[in-house]
Image (tube, rainbow, N blue to C red; front, side, top):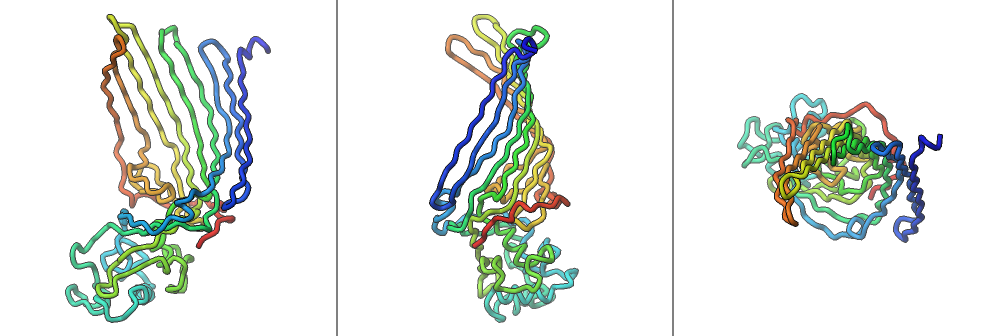
Length: 350
């Protein structure tokens, strides 16, 4: 047995923190590295982390940001939201009344417009441009935000000079990361969806005093969207898992050294919630902006590859790098999953 365990390293850690805004929190880890052979090592472990909200997330003053709003205005007759002001929505009259209450009167262009057919709310849209997929969010700190917690599992291997290939190192690591009570401004998309009862449960009476509706501001003259107050909140879960592969090789060539590096990331799963009670959304392979992570806009590609080739000589290095990305679907292609989640049970909202 001793011959098989060539070298085993264990790393254990624990930390307790006490915050006057968030109370006591625990952080701990258990990691291992097992060098089974001269050329093969295995590594992995588990880490549990807690992050208390920072000063900005607690107390930031109103700060404007322009964000993506792909479904368009649910009060518009051109909306892509099936729960909005469209003829196919059985609750269209309730939606229109809620829009009217958010605007604050029954005399705005929402009720009186004649530039579209039909006139009035059944045909109301923005005038120019009709479809406007952006929104102004007024991001604001929230003293009621609780800490977010993260759990990370990793398992991998390091292979050095396989098959006797000099200066070749290959690593392969699988990971799973789950964040609960994710701290981020509640997105304007989530706010509008919940105000307009997108799931049949978030505002079933179409009440303008609903907590989400209170965050919406509309223009009292044109009836158009004005802004949304985006409070920092605990937004539920964010889960990602995948595999990282890297290959690094060097070879003495002439007076210097030729180097080749290739890394590949494959995402098996990327899911999130926009609020603790919202359905889990599967964003893998889409341009979904991921509100739960602060509005990632680069896309959740199924895989990415990065390659570099370079030459080093006498302290000088020159290299060429390139990246490959596969095709990706639009943000609207992200879909709800059936996975239930009770991760938001301890979350407070403003």
